[in-house]
Image 1: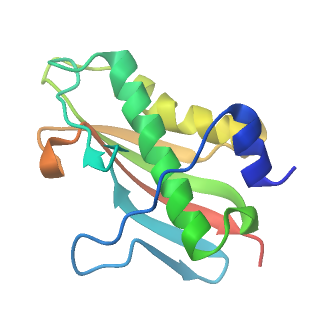
Image 2: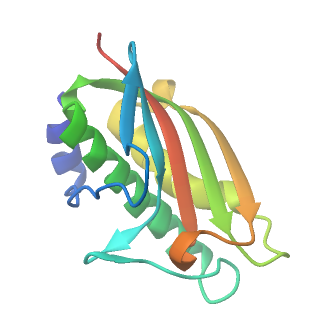
Length: 151
């Protein structure tokens, strides 16, 4: 099944992709690998903000990670067409959290769970989930990623 059809079947709609906010490309490729710059959650055109374990719950942080993955997929759709993407190879998930918060991998599950549902459990990516004290614009999650495309 095509990726766009599968997303619809799962009940997801891709948000509008964002332009770069600085001197970089949001998406770039080398051979069959596609690299997506770090992106964060956007809702109704505005960044979602919060401190995980502070004013943001684990559930809301997982939603923010899922929103971020949808933005990543929208960027891939704009650049190469989502149906040209074979799988995600690697995710790095940065979680802006209270110092005592330790469930960073559970936050990352919001993003990788969507990938599992889209591409299948056997094609889940390698992943790191890292706690940080600050992210741009006060966002709770930033994700950078590497995908493989059909080449």
